[in-house]
Image 1 (tube, rainbow, N blue to C red):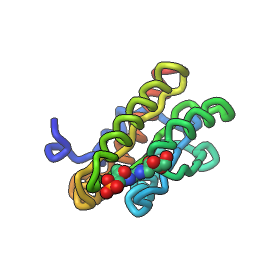
Image 2: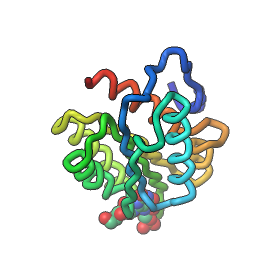
Image 3: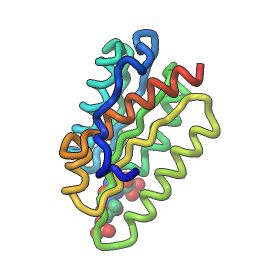
Image 4: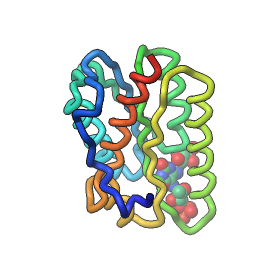
Length: 160
Ligand SMILES: Nc1c(NC[C@H](O)[C@H](O)[C@H](O)CO)[nH]c(=O)[nH]c1=O
Ligand SMILES: CC(=O)[C@@H](O)COP(=O)(O)O
């Protein structure tokens, strides 16, 4: 189902485990900061709405989406977290760099899920233009950060 056919912010709270005893990491890329901050807000609000405590949500920032893999790895190695949300916004430019950044980031986060026992949620928008990014970070299609936070809760419980 394409994003256009669902709202990323909609979830049934009655079907989401309470997050009060869970600890979360959120690693945020600074590229396209207006978008990634909106994604972060969506994720943080959803975690709190589902019972997470403010002191149990740890935020780290990295320069760009390519650095999300390293940042999440270091968080897994040095912090006790039950799940991590990796937040980025990649917007296509003039060259093929977009393809390399998106592929490397997706593969890197996938590799972390294989190598470690901490679920890392892929909250990286890969858009052709800023309008698509805005629509998915609190716009007409909802907020992917919200969706990612719900996935983080579900995967944290599954992983225990
Ligand atoms: N163009 C975008 C980037 N590019 C930067 C890379 O992510 C990386 O920081 C750089 O190549 C140094 O290693 N990053 C994004 O997150 N979004 C973009 O649109
Ligand atoms: C995703 C990118 O790296 C891209 O925004 C960079 O822009 P350009 O391809 O025009 O250098």
